[in-house]
Image (cartoon, rainbow, N blue to C red):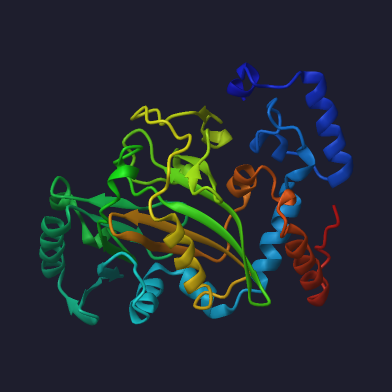
Length: 347
């Protein structure tokens, strides 16, 4: 809140109160998004293009309810995601092994073998020597919570007994151009898609970066995101941190001083093609695709069947202005009526 008060780009307080009152009357809900989506800043003219939290929730809930159960199970369980994509030969991070309760398993050439703790530790040690590091993730973690990097520096401190339902992935060697912006985390592209009646729409795109030596890029954990100019395959001028992490606006990465504006994203056409080729394998109405960029092309890191829309709304400059938003709204309204939920919206 202190940063908001001191923000040089903040609108006049009278205008802020006026616009908040307009949104309160129109949306019939407290316009909290006015602050979290930076509508209070002078460069945001059409505040009506942005989704209130109420309408954002309606979209997410109804799209999620329409998601096939098998897609949700695969998307929400990182082990199932790996086993599913492995069978389909999709380009995803290499799965080294996993822990379930007190049991440890390795994944060797698509053969699953149960091993002891000692054998698992030795396997992880060898994988670290081969790949540089191992990334550890809880099966059902969200927003990077519980994830950590395992290297030669901390492998001896690892207590496998403390890891219940964890997977171990080989480190992804990130593209050197992306490393110029931030080299300490895998900086993923997040693409939000709307899929209905066999039509795929790209609703928004952004790229996430870690900060302050963090090994994860999630904005919810203190990282930042930069909107993508999808047509021109490049980053836009500014990046943002979420309001609860300061609400900062960056023209360059604070750690490396590398500017965002006009940064050409390597293999961006292939990134979109990967999504287009994979949508029938994850045929959910609303999907968040997390994709890393290596020297040889894009790699599918995760899919999300209940993606948050706040960063996407900011990145697009208000999702209501998207040419396919009316189709999305119609789907949400019709589905809400079909399942007899009073969760339709008109504005």
